[in-house]
Image (cartoon, rainbow, N blue to C red; front, top):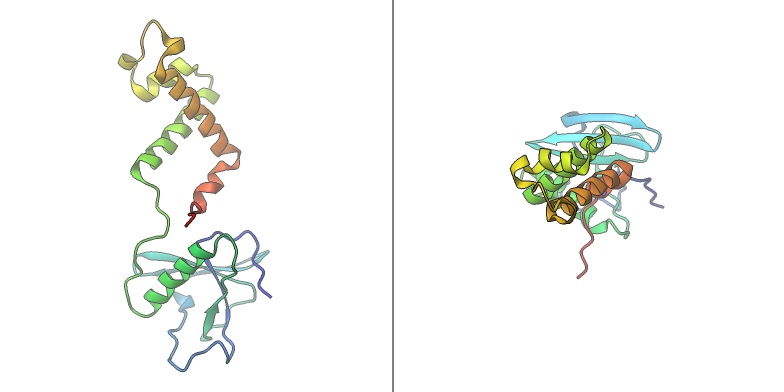
Amino acid sequence: MFWAPEVLASVVPVKVASATDLSSASQPPLDLAAGQVRRAADGWHAVLRIGAVDHHVWFKDPPVLGASYAAELPFDGDFEARAYAARRLWRVMSGRMPGPAFHQLSKQRRERLSAAIRARDAHSAGGSYRIVAEALFGKRRIPDRAWKTHDLRNRTIRLVQGGLALVRGGYRKLLRPGRREE
């Protein structure tokens, strides 16, 4: 029975392949020497650097050098991302290009997250929303009057709240790809 603890969706759970798992075609080997393997409370974790891409693999049991492996992909909420990560790993093991990553943050999203963390840090250090807004958007954009109703004040407050949410554990959502409904 498959069981994986809180393993990220981009991590491929694998097991030593049984005779029934192996196909008649030769299976490319999983080169454990291409990365770092470490023991953890939930099993063994490996980061295999193949080409310019890191591939994350999780073993329930200790890895066996030279063994053939099979991916274990449970039909859970992360199936699509895990299957994609397994396919990328299989492609590089077969000497092909891995293809694009499943989940990448857009430039706009990365900039907003950066601004949220900066806003949270400045506010936590004692800066007022006005001071935070001046640091983020420039003093010239902040009006002397009508600050209480200005759109940059509301935006600054949302950024501080977003930064607080990230610090309180919301960053974990960034590590999992968004759910796509089709």
